[in-house]
Every structure is written in structure tokens, then in C-alpha cells.
Length: 454
Image (cartoon, rainbow, N blue to C red; front, side, top):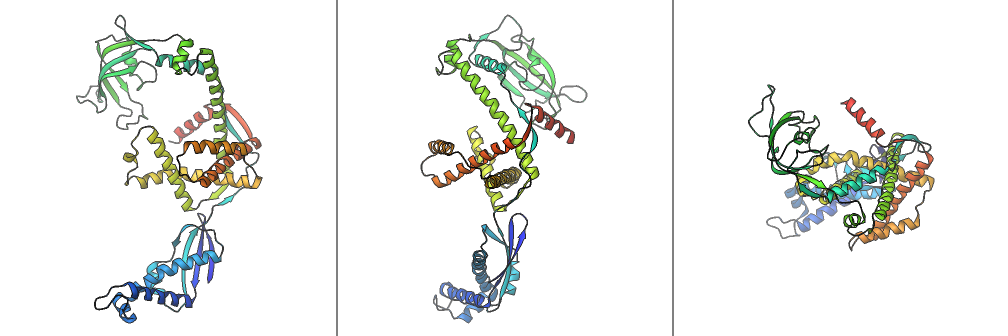
């Protein structure tokens, strides 16, 4: 069989395949015999239809179409094996099927074109000695104090307040309703959908609800009704309300203050469901956790900006079949996250929405796949190996979380790939020149740059 290969974009190989004359004749004869055995024609017993009658009744093109369905598939498989091509997924027929039917003649050589996905081609240009900035997170004792204060607030006793006005830190129970303010500065008659509530519990704290709303309650006394106007942020989630002035009518029905528990051993025991008997032991554990979180945040920042450098200096041609698999993985991960949050995924991942969701997920899937392929190739070149103890530990953890019936071989491969990528990232970080800046610095610069582009 004559096969001409052509390298195509997107990690594909084009094939021009010439099927020998004897093969085209044999395929035709076999198809006609099969049809004669299976087709029911009036006036003939099944399997007893003469060849010429069969061709006449079914039509030449229908028979040739049946021949080509098997002939193309069989010839392509034979060509892939003959040329030692590592094909992924199904092939794409590049020739028009109608044109092939017209061109096909039993007993004559037959040529068609197809394309197959092949494993990604990774081009490594530069990955050692990369220079970039990353954010360094530091442990701040104030974070520990803030955490404990928040826990005190969660376990606080709410005490009714009757002898003073509302102030920051209180809890307000109120009714409210909102109306748009028109260009003349007048309040419109209709209540805005979604801006009306009764017995609404509101923590009077900075950053709650929208700017200015909490401030409107400060100074109010129980049973008092008041109006105030706030302006919704330009980037508010509801585009119809973004940037609009809204007049709120609020009635403060109850006011409560928080009576915080003492920061002592009893509080530590209650807050941790008796995991810690003393406040000192709990504080020590929290401090260790916060320090570990800071280290993890720093490592994640290094990896993020390291991956950006790798993507800028190296490349991978991605086969479409692999991209589609990665898109499915991205959407599956999103579904699991939504499900954990209590969101009904069936309302989001509808049949009509799936194509749009897949297209939206494509950039993330392509970047994830490209990063993985580049790192895997670097690991091969640099002979980076994983830690056996870490592999066994990760495997046992995964087995404990999974139900029975999982494919252990696939699980081991997935863990090995995961650990190889982690080890390669750590190795690359050691080879790089990293300038650390305070946490939040780079993200603020990126946000500012994005605003300027808009």
C-alpha cells in the first residue's frame, strides 16, 4: 500500500493512501456477497438475490458507499500499522465522501486522504536559569489574633440593645426595600426586584453588602424607620443595577450586640470541639498552620509565574483529541466543586449549555495540557525521578478516598504523573533566579494593567 505522510498543524499527520486494485475488487465482492445474504427484496428469498438484480435494485452508489465505509476504515488502520504511526483517537476523512463514491471503481487503484491525531510535539527552547518575580507570603501574628477574634464572634452571645443607637459591630434585624433614584433625584415608585426583605439579619461591619448600606444603619434606634441613598459599584454583579443610585427605606426592628467569650482554655475547648484542652496548645497549632499556609502560598506563586515563563519560552502542539479530554476533565472538576457547594449542577450543565461551557473551558484546558506536556518533556530530558516513599504515601491516601472498583494501574500512572510534574517544578525553581516581592504586589499590578487595557 502506497502511503504519503504530511505533517499538519495541531499535532496531526495527513495521509494520502493508495489502495491497490486487487484490494478494491476484493472489498467490492465481499460487500456484494454480504448484502446478498442480508438484504430483503420482494420476490426473492433472503440470501438468494442474484448479483445483478441486487445492484439494479439498490443502486450502484449505495453499494459503493457500503464498500467504502469498510474499505477506508480497514485501509487506514493498515496504513497506520505499516507506517508505525502512533495515532490517537479516530481519523478525519479529508476527501469528500461523495467525490470518493464517484471516483471509486472496483478493480482499480483507489486514493483517499485522511488525518490522524498523533502525540503532542513539545519544543523545548529555554527552561533553565529563568528569571522572574514571585510573591512571598509571610506569617503575621496579627492573622492569628484576627482568626481568634472571628472565632469569638462566632461563639458570641447576642444581647438585645435598647438604650443606645446602632454602632459598628452590632447585629441589626431589619426590613428594607430599594427603589431607583431617577435623573431628577426623585425616588421611583416601584421596588427593585431582589432589594426587599423582612427580618433581615445584618452584621454592621465594613465590607458587608454594598458600600454605604451598613453605614446607613449606624445611629438608628430600634423601631426607627429611615431612608438613605447608596450608589451600586460599577462592577456590581447585576449589570442592570451597576452604577445606579438606589434609595433604601429601612426599619430597624431589633438591635443586638455581641458579648464575646473570654479567650481562655474553656473557649479553646468549645471552639475546637474538645480537640485542644488549652488555649496555648490551640494557638501553637494555629501558628504552625498559618506558617505552613504562608509557605504554600509562596510556593504556589513561584509555580504560577514559573509556568508563565515556561509557556513563553517553550511550546507544545496539542492534538485535538487530547484537548477535548482535558476540557472534559476541567468541566468534571467544576461540577464536583459546584456539587460540594450545594449547587444543583443539572441546572448549569444542561444539554443546551454544554457546547458553550466546553468552548469557555477550552483556554484553561489548552494551558493545563500544554504545561503538563512541557514539564513531562523536561522531566524526561533531565531524568527527574519521583520519591518512592512519597508515591506510596500518595497512593495509599488516594485508595482510602476512592470506592472499590477503581483501576489501580491507572491510579498509579496518574499519581506518578502528578508527582513527576511537582518534582520538575521544584527542580526548575531551584534553577531559576527569583525576585520575591510582598504578597499581593504582582496581583495588584496585573489588575491595574487589566483596568488600563479596558
